[in-house]
Length: 130
Image (cartoon, rainbow, N blue to C red; front, side):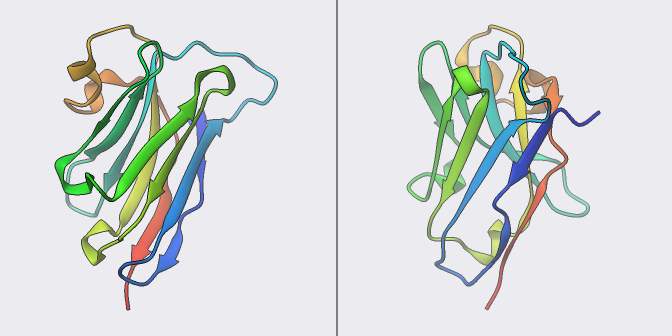
């Protein structure tokens, strides 16, 4: 079931920028998430890790292919997370999913894969093309 809602996707030219946002679908409700992150998926491929934020430490994690281009940020009090994407490339084209974790684990748990997350959004399309 959809519990998070992503927004901010769209069509941009190579080298352009987008900022994705994610918030809980149930307004007025308070949830305790230990971490939130972003994943992306293209047809025929597995959902891959993009970036994550561990709220209790403030630690952030970014996949190698986005380091220096994408930056994750968020607000635990509002159960929100953002992904600033700069220097977009055609290979960044994908559906981007927001995720949250209700489990308190070590950092690697949140960037090893989708297993660390139990709350998901339905995704937002990002297309990079000239």
